[in-house]
Image 1: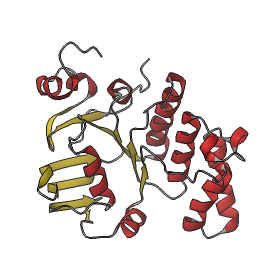
Image 2 (image 1 turned 180 degrees about the horizontal axis):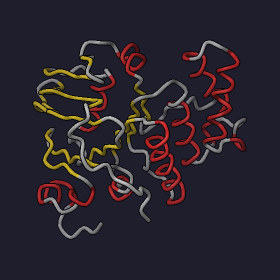
Image 3 (image 1 turned 90 degrees about the vertical axis):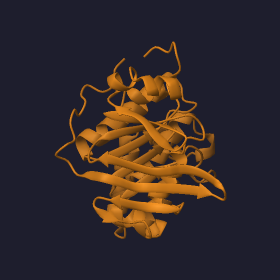
Length: 256
């Protein structure tokens, strides 16, 4: 089933929300990303695909400020942030991140997890509670609100982590493997939430996931990375026909 009913066809008049210029990332003598130039347009859902070791996580970490590039510059909404520390960068630019693993405090309840983040970002007590309750309803967490996060199902944990990411005013949402180890019903639920965030809140979203069929049904466009370089880019229909994307990632004989 196609989740997304529309695709944004052209970005030529839009300014990028994220731009990487000649980005190079090395760990010791090993070069992970080499002179990468990448633009992610505002108000779009962009996918990053590629085999393990292609550099996807390193790119995410550089955008977040967790990893400092060896060379190159990072711009968010036109502002260079290359040397701005993580905590200041995410606050200044409205960047939220949902990691593949973890993200919630295991022994805290759903409500306590949300409160822990809300206390960092919302000073007014009434506004804080209002935001938390709104997210609990939106993500349908009412029935598990008092349960510790460690006993939640995979889909419930994913919803909690998304809700925690959206406590603050978010302009950019980075999702690392959001569909990993989820059942089909939970995958569809997360896909619908992603499309809703783009349509109604104009959040720019970047997704990386090896479940490429689930990813491609949600994004406006995607890029395929191989050995730290972009080898293919386009809409889902364009990408699945691209010879480089097939050779470097999808493999011969795949079906979409």
